[in-house]
Length: 219
Length: 219
Image (tube, rainbow over all chains, first blue to last red; front, side, top):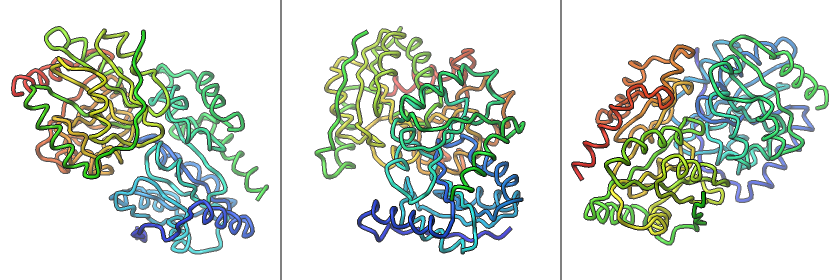
């Protein structure tokens, strides 16, 4: 599977916030939903995206941009498993994406898409500090990481529209309380929705798919 | 349990590498082993440190510095569970520690210690880019994160002296191959040692304790 790789350079925009607002306005005008996916390394982002895209691509034209420091494993996996358009963003060691890098990725991906997932660098700190221009901010927290993470990483949970709790199939093996986790998310962000899922067993994936369908009818 | 909290400011040192080298030389002269502990959020750093310090503090004078963006949960836990000296480093949103911040923490912790653990910010990207002046760089990778992480985060695995694979009690529930993980670490770093442990069950903790005892006799 051939996947195009984009080598990102430092952003040319001095004012990232303004560039992000402009990008978001343009996407809204074009009716494109751009989802900025943030999480720790190893939270199951790629597996979750594959499962989600398989369900959504029956109704929508979906594209994926995969940020990775030094490999194209994820972009190839997503393209192979879902058949959707996918580009790899090589960050060259950078710890986050900004609006300029996101624009570069979108240009490489091409137009005519309803829904684009941007898999940000695996990091709960820096990606939260840079507005990518996305229309939806999503954070994934996996069960093995612990239900206290929203308290420890306030910025990323404070800015997200949706918090997905992944790997719920592992709940029996870890001391993770879904109710306490949802309370911790809401303490940081009363407006965020919390949806627990297992991409492995498919548990509650319908609720997540429906959240996106609702979002897409709003665009 | 009262734990002192240090509010870190941006480093005064323009040349972090030089400051780090100077700090490391001073620590070696004083016979202090300073361990920079890096990992993803939720890898079980704090639980592992508590288990390790309980075993090592019978023979050595141990101190801990806990970097946290916005809470002092970890410093209080470590102090309460081990009785060792502990300070909280508030990074105020910063995504890494540098040599200047480490010096501030050491000054607050006070002298007369053999072994100091510095729990860096939960992040596999940025902490790897800043030399803290530590004499040992340790990275923790937990089983649920996946055995491919050394390939995806080359810098942190490339610079570590020791890679600890944590939460091995979860091996039956995840597709994680210890042998493949060790090969992936060695691909990045032929000199790194790899020690798999479970702080929960105590499995192989002796090997980790012995690694530190050996290190401390070398100081």
